[in-house]
Figure 1 (cartoon, rainbow, N blue to C red):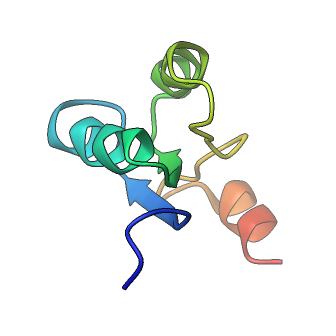
Figure 2 (figure 1 turned 30 degrees about the vertical axis):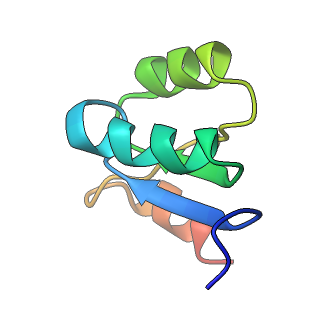
Length: 72
């Protein structure tokens, strides 16, 4: 397995362990995509760490409109 140049999706990545799991591979040369429920934290993370991406909207379990938009 190559250790750089990968794209890694981290769910629950807005704090604690999830954020650490996103930052470490990103710093090692991988692209990290962070998903979470708190959009304001996702905005902060992407602003503070250029190159880390987040979906425009991460659907919650009860968010049917968001789920439909991500299932296409």
